[in-house]
Length: 145
Picture 1 (spheres, rainbow, N blue to C red):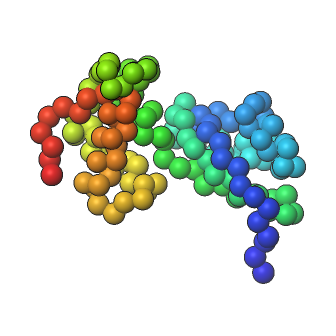
Picture 2: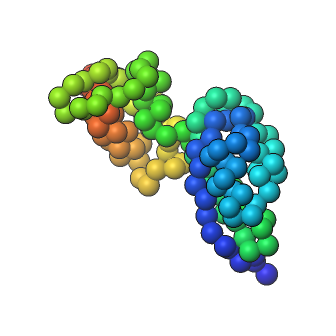
C-alpha cells in the first residue's frame, strides 16, 4: 500500500552545498523531517552541479519519511549567466541591461525542457525569451522559427 502524503516543501539550494542552516533546517525541522538525511542525499545527487541553484520539491509522508525531486536551474539564473550579468533591470520596460542571442535562448530552453509545460522547443524558446524580456534583456538576432 502506498504511503499517505502529509505535504510538500519547495526549496532552492545550491548544488552539493546543502547544510542544516536556514532555509533548509527550519523548513524541514518544522515538519519533523530528518534534516541531515536530506542534506546527505541532496549533496550526493547534486555533487556534479556545485554552486548552481537548484529547485527541490520534497514530498513528505505521515511516517516522517520523504522523497525529493531536483529540478533544472531557474531560467532567470541561466539567462543572467548567459548575459554575464549579476542582476536584471529594475525597470525592464525602460532600461535594458544586456542581451542574449537566440542560440543562447535555445540552449537554455533545451536545458529547461523537462520542467516546462510545453511540447516543442519553439514554444520553450518563446517562454525563455519572455522571461528574458521581463528581466530587461533584449533577445538579439533573427527569430529562428
